Image (cartoon, rainbow over all chains, first blue to last red; front, side):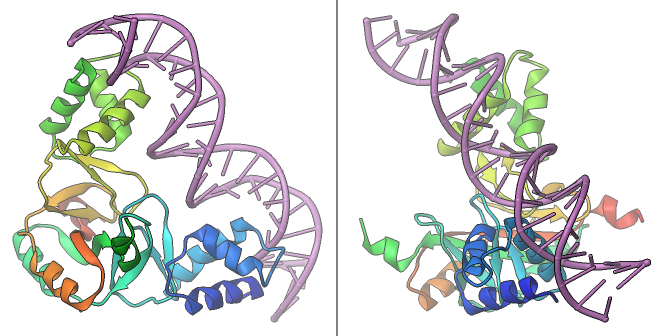
Length: 124
Length: 124
DNA sequence: TTTGCTGCAAATCCTTTGCAGAGGT
DNA sequence: ACCTCTGCAAAGGATTTGCAGCAAA
């Protein structure tokens, strides 16, 4: 656990904005001005392999990261592309239902809601 | 509806393999050897805007396309990265549940299962 | 003639990687 | 000394875009 890795984890844990790698780079750079973007990518990969964070691959183009490693759902605003946590309990029963209907070995599921965030819904 | 667009749509409708843009390019090239990859990308974008096809953005890296424009779920093999349709009815109730719990204006949801396809589950 | 579409090539964006040096054990 | 990690820069892959020519209305 190097200093860079620790700072990346701390900064990511602080926010619930599901930042992209580049946004994390900007956040971390305030504390470690000489860190490189490559190091940020490498450590995000390692931290998510360790289960300390989650790598999200929402619709849209770029990956985002979540300091909360526990399974939960997300909602993405189709207007501003921001991602937030969706306050809905895990629906594990869908895995059972699908398992009964297919020859796949189901190991998980990802549920992403799309919609308009409150801010975008109110601005024209 | 140019010839190129028609052929792309026909080829995509023929298969249920959810090919990537490049795979579609390879399929179409057998019938239109001089078509360009740029044209394939442009027409996939247009066809999905028209609602004739779907653009999928599964976990993993590249986009995939589905000749079936109707809402349905998918399952992705974590070993070979192939995508198949998931035989499970739409769960519209989750949108209602979440709508009641959030200020977002929910407009849809995407559910992706992950697991091992029968082929990968049986090979070591 | 106007409009939209094409093929080609270059550009762009995000992400990964090679390498030499630094740091810690 | 050894191993892992870093910063930097370059490479990589997928996708988009600029442009001049073509085709149909």
